[in-house]
Image (cartoon, rainbow, N blue to C red; front, side):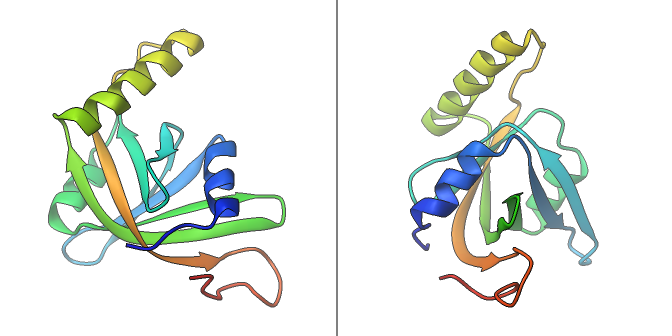
Length: 136
């Protein structure tokens, strides 16, 4: 696992939506917007599952995943290996987070599970000459 720089952590925590990309066993990509996300330490991103269908099937077939976040002229693609959990202490923490956010929104959302992505690589996706460069 790789430690995320503080500016990457701050961006993940501040943007309302990120894109989670997965691939099935045949390599067919799937990318979805996700809002229930958090940083769980400096080397793990967690995304709650309220609606995963293809995404969950993909994670079961191929645990590699990418999260992309951006705001203005700053953006990162974070790649890693995912573990899906729907019980245990880590999942319960995510479920509580979702319950709190859902209550504030007045939305009937519940976490069915959580995708914990161990960060392995980070790339710059901001426009300009550094786009595509590894920052780790």
